[in-house]
Image 1 (cartoon, one colour):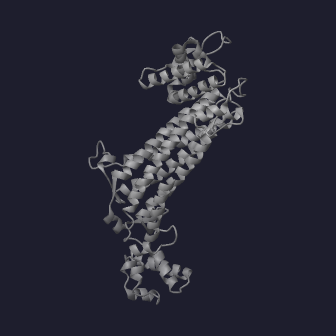
Image 2 (spheres, rainbow, N blue to C red; image 1 turned 60 degrees about the vertical axis):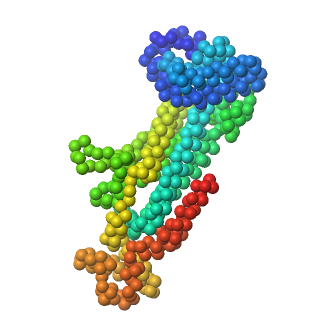
Image 3 (cartoon, helix red, strand yellow; image 1 turned 60 degrees about the horizontal axis):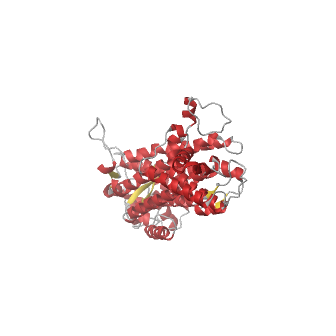
Length: 462
């Protein structure tokens, strides 16, 4: 049996070694040590400020905690499994440094409100970092879009050629998705930034603590108004995992497109050597590893979200040991999202190149301008549904003859309908097809340039 140093005299024997290992969280919650120290410093100051401990004792506690911080950063503080978790590890080391006064740190505090505080401090920082990464990715998208306003790319629905687009318009669709991600994270930040410290184990404390002072010290915007909710709430973690999952959805969708674009069948982009690898057996291969890994890692984040929902759905109030399982889900999701954002940003900034000549060929070799023929007739007074049916017949005829719409002679056009004139060829040219879609939010070049301007303004203003 392991020596038991953390529990009261209620226990006559220590944990079985296997149970101690099973119960311990120090292997992963050491990630919270800086936040645990920061929260403990604020708590120690509050204890002294309210007279629960003396000012001198408060100074001793703060000095000891900062010494532990230095030791950890220098690699000199590496608690093992016998500490069980980061909170006991810090308290034990503090007692070694400050003597019996170190044992006073836990006055008016439980591990339940302590870990809730640490987790919120951690996630608050990580959300800020991810929002910065999202902004950087958006900037890369904008730069790429600005360079490709008049570069055309086939647009698809049902993965079938639909209508040609400005490549910039296509890229800006991802800018908008990321804008929602950035905004969503900001909203979640507000709900993360609430302090549970002072809730105690579940019912508050008999000591005259000042929860508002501690919250201000830790730069929280408010405090939990119900101690039961304060120690058991993990809505903020689930919300973050929802937002993280949506970020991964957006990265994965873009990744899937890049994978397709890089294939020989599409050949819309060339992957540069800095962001691709080869095959161990096929020397001609260049593999899109970055987007494939992003697409694959998306499932991890989805899994953590599902695990957290299942974890919470049956927990009675207040704290339960099950909640120890929230940390690995959060830590891994944070690292996965941050890593995928970094890799995808590098890939778009310097790892691929659009093949403009191939894209120009692609938009000229299909019937994606068929709608424009129908629109042309409608502008001449032909009812749209009648024009739509007529163009469908034209496409069928062209397919049978091995022709494209641009290959029809004016005489053939007039045989189909007398409203056709020489200007039909300009109307169905890919560049004109794109330019003509000038409705607000459309792919027309004027609209795209305005969208780029608006996007830049949003990045600067927010």
